[in-house]
Length: 141
Ligand code: FE
Image: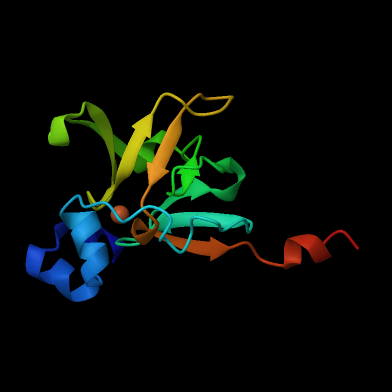
């Protein structure tokens, strides 16, 4: 049951996540830029929360931001994420968390490309990539 994942205790999260995932998703850490496995990923598919599996971003909205983290100009649906004020590290930022499990994903900024002007700056370790099925290509013949 996916719903149960929202009620995991800290110890339970520690068991199901890698140490790096735990640090970012549960302790609001940030992975080092240019190190994430999905930063250069250009395949078609969907990016889901690595902790609970909720689908968050489409490859259609991914863009090269030059920041070192996977960046998107939109979420699949605004219901999938929660935005909250983050005033840590002497900065004023807007944090993005998964609406289902509360996992920390990254931050959103107002310097993204059109049409939204948003830049969702997301940690690679907070995401699982699901590549689109090949059958979409074959269906045309
Ligand atoms: Fe989640």
